[in-house]
Amino acid sequence: MATIHRPPGISAILTRTATTGLATAFSRGPVPSKKPDLLQYTNTALSRSPVPPKKPDPLESTDTPPYWQRAGLAGPACEFYPPPSALMELPPLASLAFVVSGGLELPAWLVALGGKWGPYCFDAAYCGGHFDTCGRMYTADMFDSNEPGYLERFIRSVMYVASPAFDIERFDDIVRLYGIARPGVRLCVAAPAFAVMPTDLMKPAEQPTPMGRYARVGVYFERATEQLFIRAHGKLSAHVFRTGVDTATKAKFGEDLRGFVRPDGKLARLPVSEETLVGLFEEVSERLQTLFAPHRVLQCSMHGPGWTEAYFPGRRYPNDFVECSKPRADEVPPFYSEVRTFSAGRELYFHTVYQDEAQIRDLYRGKLEKFLIHGLDTGRSADEQIALIAGFVSDMVTAHVFTDANNRVWIQILLNQLLRRCGQSDTILAVPNGFAARVRYDLGAANHPPPGTEAYLDAMRHAVQMIRDGQRYYASLCAQSPCQLANIAPDCWL
Image (cartoon, rainbow, N blue to C red; front, side):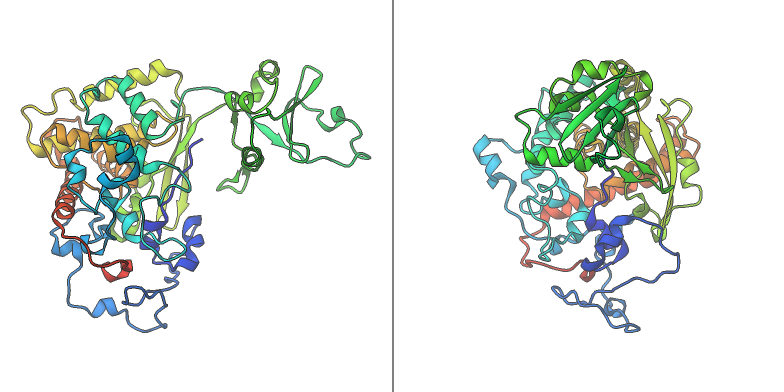
C-alpha cells in the first residue's frame, strides 16, 4: 500500500508552525476553525524566535510587494514560489558524483538551471520552506533518508524520457520509466496478500500448546520468537526468517504489522503480499496456498489529493470539492473510496486496484486517445496543448496504476517531456503534489467537457495559468545570478 506523503516544507509554509510544532502539522488531524497560529517568525533571516503576542508582524508594514507579484505570477498557489535569490546555491548537477562517475550527458534544460535545480528536481514549495533539525535549507540528499538515491533516479528518469528510446505512447516504456524512477513499484493489480496478525507469546498456564494459541485459521507472527505461524486445515506450521534476512528487515516487518488507526478510530492492519512472505520466511509458499479465500486480501494502493488546498483561496477546499472529485462514469471505479475531514475541509481518498495488466493497458490507450496525445504537437495553439497535457497527466495520476511515484512521473517528468515535444519551455509547478486533484476538481465543476473543445479549454484556464507561471519561474531560475545568501527563513519572502 502506498504511503500518503505530506511534505514537511509546505506544511511549515501552510501552517506557519515553528519547527518545534511540526509534529502537529504532520498529523493532519482536525483543527478548530478559529484556532490561532501557534507562532510567528521574526523578519530576521536566521532567527526563529516567536513574535510576542499582539505584536504586529513586521512583514505587514513593509512596502515591498511579495516576490510572486513582482514576478508577474498570478495563478493559484503562486504565492508559494520561493524567489530565486532566497534559494540556497547548490553544486551544478554536472558536478555531482553520480553524473561524473557515470559519464552522463545532462540535457541542456537541466544544465541551464546552474545551482538552482532544487525546485525542478524536488518541489518548489518544499525547497522554499524545508528545514532540517539543524535549521538548514534543502540539500542534494534531502530525501535520501526515506528514499536513497532519489536525485540520481530522478535525473536518469528525465534523461530516459528525453532519449530516442522513449515513446510516451508505448506503455512498456512507461513501465521502464517507473522502474528507473522508483525501483520496486508494481502495477496496482489484484495480487495474493494476507492479513498477518501480530501476537505476543501468552503465558504457558493460559495457553499450554501452540494449537490452543492459534485456534483460528490464519497467519500469525510472534515478535518474541520471530516466527510466522500458519493455521489451515487443522494443521499449524511454524516458519523462521530466511538466513539472509538482516536484523533491520526483521524489525521493520514486525513494526509494520502494528498497522495504523483509521479516521473512524478503528485499527487497520496492512496486508502483506505473498511475494514478501515467501521472500522473508522459510517454506511458506505451499502453506499459503492452503488458506481459504476469505483469508486472502487484495493488495491495493491508497492515494489522496496531496496538498491541493494550496491551490484554493485561504487554503480551504470549496464545499463541492468532494462532489466534483468523484470518479467519472467512464472511469474504472476504485476498489473503494472514503471521505476524510481535515482543517482545510473534506478530502476524497481512493483505494485503487485493477483486475490485471491488460485492463491497465486498455485504460492507457483510452487516455492517449481521449486527450489527443498522438496529434498534440500539430495544429493547436500553445494554450490548447497545455490544457490537453495537463488533463492527460492529471488523469494518469488519479488513475494511480502503479503503487508509488505516480505524481513524480506524470507531474514532474512527463508533463515537461510533453511540453518540450510541443516546442514549449519546461515548467516548475509551485505545489506538484496537489496539481492533479485541482485539475480534476476544475473539470468536475464544469461537468467534464470533452478534451479539445472550447468548453474544455475554458475549464482548464486555471491549469494553463499554473503551468504558465511555472514556465516563467523556470526562466527566472535560469537567468538568476549566483545566490549570495547561504540561508534565509521563508517568512522573509512570503
